[in-house]
Image (tube, rainbow, N blue to C red; front, side, top):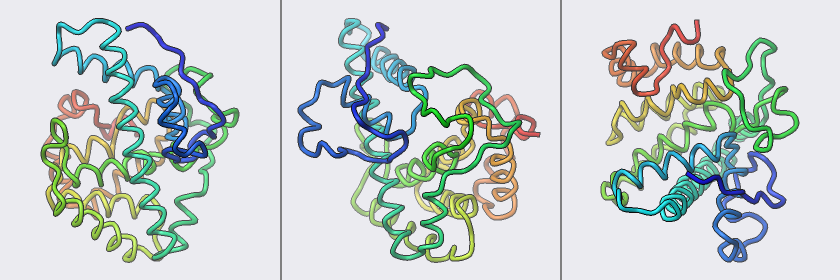
Length: 266
């Protein structure tokens, strides 16, 4: 796929914005500028790879597509995914601010990186903030990654979101409020695992919830082994639905699904 140059504008890395300060002007921007800004707000350090991945998915379904069509489709699909995740993340923060201010403060506070925890791969420095090696912005953490995605799984996905219904969306939003309210003295990790388990107990596919919650790609991009060790421990003790699904998988199956194995963070 031909590499296009994304435009980031004045977006701050991991600000979680959807349309941003441009408001309605955002939709009038060229597509590369829209997806660039959205990826920046979503704290994505691999935006070009995400576009490539979505483009390849499009090419599988449309083998006759030209390179230009494939690249454009990749950008459109990436933009939609970033926007949806940013919006849901913003909704979760909004409800936390109302229902559980302490959790809201924790969810919006950057996390310092451990000195021995570095990304397992080289990242494009043009996509990173200058303090990337010192701290993780909230959306860069595993919780920032998986919390909006597990909620979206409960909304319903499938081709063109064919599994999505108003009832599923309503149940997911009610669950967000319920888990936020139940976690007055717990931090983002505890809240995140509780929310993931809640989604898996409803309509969301437990395997997909685990793929987001224990995403190997995030470990490679962020290097935060300690956080994932804690998430695994919390899953084992507090999320029986997810742990049963996780335990039933072999190490090879986890690897093929892009799921972290216990040995990866030992």
